[in-house]
Image (cartoon, rainbow, N blue to C red; front, side):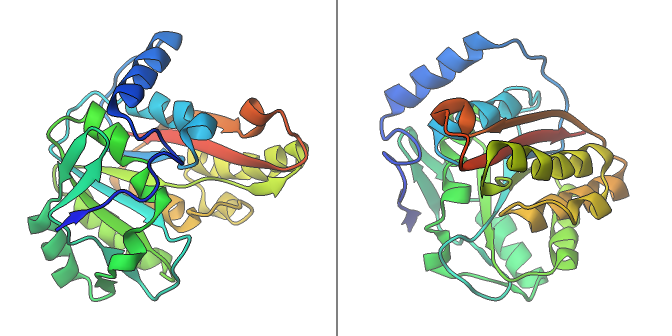
Length: 255
């Protein structure tokens, strides 16, 4: 059973040629140095709004990982705990990505709060990352986890367990939603400082749809001695020029 695409043509192009051309164009527009990375925070809005921000993080990751654990918040389905995808593969406009079913089943057995709710995986926070993964980490397998009503401790335990394996941890989140540009920047500064300083207290003043994922990777980074770097902040204003109601986006690397 393959996971069908739900947001192609909306959040991202439905043409592989268009995706590849866009990635190539963005690569030429900025300089970047690759580095060893254990985890990354990436935004998940439509590519025209946050795609360049996300891609700037992906392109700096030096290692070609064989396994990627991708987690994001549920926007459409409310449930207890988190859902782990037990599909055979995930479809993208550039072909399918194999699911690491061995790891997925191991995680589901180990963590009692993990289940498989098929409807929870019609989720843009994770799906928009898949074309990036397909084009940048060729041959990598993916484990997709969508969380809803979950504790920070559970996510920390899960990510720390995955960090022991040869995996890249991808944390999908956007920041504040629908404030004025000035208000958004003030709110989002708390998020950026929390990520930069690995400080959960500052995260308490942050608004983000994936705040649990951000908090969990901060805790894992502290435990494992990782540092954050390459923090990039943008907003929807950069594209829309509408300062009355913006969404904030951030990407960051951990190594």
